Length: 113
Image (cartoon, rainbow, N blue to C red):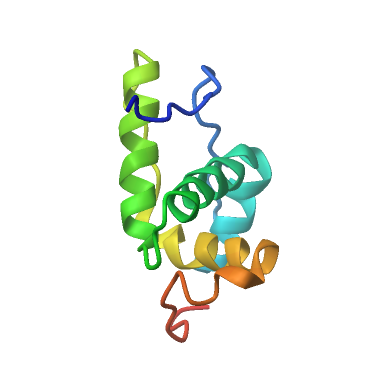
């Protein structure tokens, strides 16, 4: 069986301009997501593939690492960085899109705004 490969954009990640004020994790996530909406789509593809193959529980951390690896294999140049602070926000966005996956991911209350 040949592993599924994601179609990934070759352009580097776009990062928001640094802010002079202290932004919350949610504010930083929103700015990053607005510039890189495709990341959520790719995480959804990975999760859907996992479910289609019979997976019943998965962590967003595993999906982040697979995305990092696949993107790293498809590109050259500047290291690709995906902020771990955004994991909890991405999993909630996935569950907003796919509420039937509520048993696929474990979520906890957010500690930081």
